[in-house]
Amino acid sequence: MKPDLSRITEFLAGDVAADRLVPPTGFTARLTVFAAAAMAFLTVFALALSLATGRLADRWSDELARASTLRISSPMDQRAAQTAAALRLLETTPGVASARALSEEEQRALLEPWFGPDLPVAALPIPQLIEVIEDETGYDPAGLRLRLAAEVPGAVLDDHTRWRRPLVTAADRLRLLGWLSIGLIGATTAAMITLAAQAALAANAQVIAVLRLVGARDGYIARAFVRRFTLRALGGAALGTALGMAAVLLLPAAQAEAGFLTGLGFQGWHWIWPLVIPPLGGAVAFVATRHAAQRTLRELS
Amino acid sequence: MSYGGGELLGDISLTLSPGSFHFLTGPSGAGKTTFLKLCYGALVPTAGHIRLFGSDLRDMSRDDVALARRRIGVVHQDVKFLDHLPVADNVALPLTVSGRDRSAEAENLSELLNWVGLSKRAGALPAELSGGERQRAALARAVIMSPEVILADEPTGNIDWEMSQRLLQLLVELNRMGKTIMIATHDMNLIRAAKSQVQARVLRISQRRLQAAGADL
Image 1 (tube, each protein chain N blue to C red):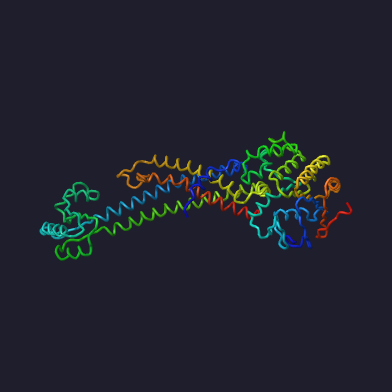
Image 2 (image 1 turned 90 degrees about the vertical axis):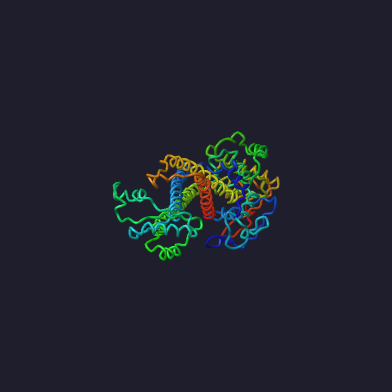
């Protein structure tokens, strides 16, 4: 259903005379503002977590998916010839953008974390590694393996699938947990505002009775309460979102050495996402209070 | 007509004709308040029919009933106000809830407060009013929309005789302006005082029946 902007504007602008009919209720007002602010603050972090894990999953997926490794484990005297044959084969393989044999220095750097800097790579039977980079279309791993088996028998293709899958699955689950948290925060906000609205309506049973006596429609009475709670929730959510965004802004900047933990903030246009939280909080409050008001008014009939 | 578990009233066929003046009397607990509540749609009968301005109450939506109430002014013995609003705002409440422009009705409101003798109390809160002032404020609120019918439930129950006379005078004036009035009361002095000024019909609720009771008064 297309939202009627004029009705939303009219609702937000309100009716000063109608607003005065409901007496101010200090406790429920403060409770609503606090609950909305706290929930918005938590939502900013859940959102930051979801977006960060999403970025991580995409990066791991992209980086590992586009790179493969070919391992030449043939005897030392055949290694150079097999490496050259493999490179020639890869040059003619559709979907392969580039392929290059890793230098001794690069292979030593890969092993350095485990064996130290003085590793004599040349003296050890370490296989020759070839880095394969795919183009946009990608290659057919099964077809390449068949060709390698026929032309370069000592070559083993590792397309990183077994490494990539659990990492991407973990990142996807983290992202899902983030969104689930946002959903739970929204539901909790709705529950708290419903309780506060019901308490306010029950406390104002006499006001409702008087308004009905003088000919107020239930919709009019409900609107007076709904508008008040919606604006409180909107204000609280705006405050919580601003504090949450400031806190995220103060997180350390993304650094390669610190990995995932320093990449938790928002990046680029993702900073727009938290701005959705206050209107969403207002919408949740609107629906929750409207439902509570309609039910309470029915019960008071 | 029945309400709740048992029969409340039976064999009734009553029409409040425009401009008429009725008293509803009977012992305490006879059902006078319930009868009035049924008349303005605060209660819906489980049997029988009540027609408000031509529509059957049982067929009316809550919005329809709300609109009908704007044509009926109600004054209770234990009158309720919005305690956080001053008298003028409480009197103007029917205008506010019906979306009428308060500024356009300012003169009307001022005249009305003057008519009930509350001009100087317009800014006071309801809690600051005496019993008589509250009743007069309730009457002003009941008539500000110029309703066709005014229902008053023991309107003089909490006020002294002098103030009762003044309130009755206001109701008689409204009747002379063509308003239909029904007052539930067990104050026979009030009924006698009214009958000396207007042609009033007295109805008595007794043994779950509504009876005309004019001769003995």
